[in-house]
Amino acid sequence: MILAGGEGRRLGPLTHDRAKPAVPFGGRYRIIDIVLSNFVNSGLHRIKILTQYKSASLDEHIARAWRLSPMLDSFIETVPAQQRTGKSWFKGSADAVYQTQHVITDESPEHLCIFGGDHVYKMDVRQMLHDHLSRDAEVTVAAIPVTKEEARAFGVIECDESGRIIAFHEKVQDPPSMPGRPGMCLASMGNYIFKTKALLDVLEHDAATEDSAHDFGRDIIPRMVQSGSRVYVYDFHENRVPGEDEGAGYWRDIGTIDAYWAAQMDLVSIQPAFNFYNPRWPIRTGISHDPPAKFVFRDEANARVGIATDSLVSLGCIISGGRIHRSVLSNRVRVNSFSHIEECVLFEDVKIGRHVKLRRCIIDKDVEIPAGAEIGFNLEEDRKKWFVSEGGIVVIPKRAKIDSP
Image (cartoon, rainbow, N blue to C red):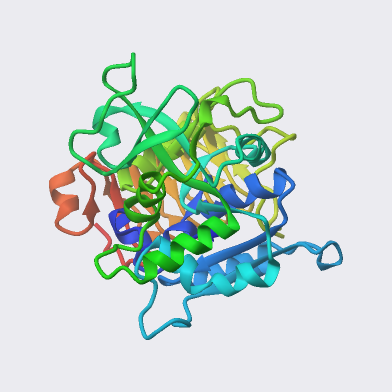
């Protein structure tokens, strides 16, 4: 089960019209494609996706892009919030699973993977499952070392030498450090493998607890630890993805505009930590019938050159005499002559007029930037019109109307 119902409020305008897992990433993908690819590449082909917040875009993407063979008992299906256990929508991650437990009992699995749908990482889930089975664990929690400052935003794990979890602290201001590694904490990735019976039992107890937040990190995992259940940690750094020599242990929580933008900029480096170009572990998505990207004009004397450097340029793009550097372009972006785009993320069907200058911007889909516009160079002026992050990233929302300068 993939938890894909979060609002993603910290992503500002990018989640005004879509759920966070449906936000574009890497040009032609959605964030949800990453966790789905991890499951499918790991040979796990029976997947339910729990949705709630503004899920239309996500539902459409799953229906059109992700079809597995029913002949082989394979499926990827979305499960919307349905108020099956009362008149409330999902009250937390654990409540989401509790309210949709009928899809678990229908399939009767012995073990259940419950992963988040909004992080960027590669994981061979079979290795975590092997670890879970070899310890006869009732729940296994994937974790990764992070700095103490970063750990305040996550659940932090304390474990003994065998890997058994002895304490779980959810988003505390002074998280405990790892033994022998001062300043570093073991953070939960929000990815769990449960014995199905143990999960259903604890969910039933949690649903009857009035003061519970009905959340896996805040309630379910701490309760199982306190009750003496066999709760173990899985060290994500031990996971090895086929074909990956570099980037072992890469994991990013892209919950803010600055983190999201930085993860996209990771992709355009010479040796990206998150590599789309590994044929043994492909990141999958829907098929596009757009034509190849096209670069036109080489009039260097008049600075009219269609060129992109250190960038990802998707199908259907036309770079017509403009210059692109360290940027990510989704399908069907048009960049016209004498324009300069640097460290930007452009979503589908963005049109850039002549003599436009953009720096450190995220432009949502169906936006037309008029000729001569400059964005990202005067942040005080930009703040009067647009969302500007703490790190100075300017976000232009979907279908925004921009006046000519």
